[in-house]
Image 1 (tube, rainbow, N blue to C red):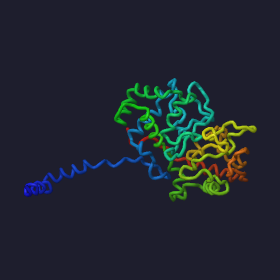
Image 2: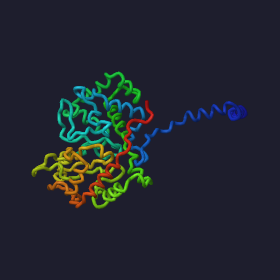
Image 3: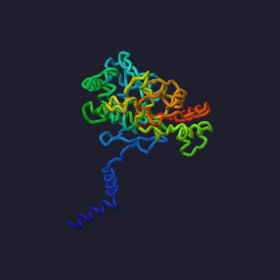
Image 4: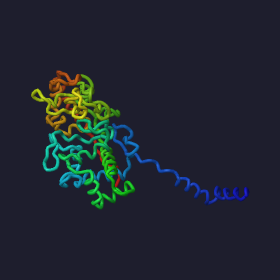
Length: 343
C-alpha cells in the first residue's frame, strides 16, 4: 500500500499530474476581493460596511436604479434628477423640487465622496448611506413612493429585475435595493484636483494666488475650523446663522432631529470638493456665488442666539478674498462614478 501511494504521488510530481495538481490548488483558492480604484488625494480604500461590500455588479445595478424614474410616484423623477452627474451630483437650484413641483425647502447637497460620510442630510437624520438612500424616495414631497411600491416597480422592470437577481442571487427585495443604491453612491468620487497634485509634490499645480488662498484658508480665514480632511468637512453641525432671519428661526436644522435647543440652526458642514461647480450655497441656497460666501464669513455670519464660537469677523481685504476664491476653484478635479471598466 505504501509503495502504491508513493508511486502515485511520484507520478503526480513528475508527470502531467503535477500540472493538474497545481491548477487544482489555484482553482480552490478564493478570488482576491475586488477594490474600487480611488483618485489622487483620497484615502487608499473606499470604505463600505461588512454587510454591503463593494462589488462591481452591485455598483452597476445601483447606478441603474439611481437613473430609474419608476422610483418616483408619477415616474417623472429619478435620483439623478436632483443629483445630476454633469453638475457634480447636485441640481444648481436654491431649493430642491420634488414630484408635482413641490419645493423641498433645502438645497440638494452634492453626492461627492459620501463613502467617507459620518452622517447624511443637512440635519444628519441618517447615520449611513443604506439608511439615507430610500428616504428621498419615500418623502411625499420628493419622490413620494411607498415601501411596497418600490419593490414592485423594480420587479416589474424586466431589465432591472434581471440585473438585481444577477447581483444578489435572489428575487428582488427592498433591502437589496438599498444595498445597491448605497453601493453606487459610494462609487461617486472626486479627486485628482490641482490641490491634490500640489499636495502630492507638483508645486506648479497651484498658481501664486491659489497658494496664498491656501495659506489664508488654513490661517487668517480659519476655514479649517470646520473644513478639514481629504473631503474638507468635519462631518459635524455648525450654526452660521443661515437659518435665522428677522429674529426667528426659519429652519431648526439639527434641532429638528435631536430636539435640543443648542442645536437650533446648526447644519452639517458640506465638503468643498467641486465647490466651484455646485452653486448656490448653504443649506437653503441663499448665497449664489463663492464671493458671497466669503463675504458672509468675513462679516462673521449672521448673529443669532446659537452662533458657533468659531464664527467671527475676519477683516479680509479684497485681494485676500479673491485669493480664497481662487483656491476654492483648485478643489475641482475629476469626478468619477460607477465601477471603472464595467459594461
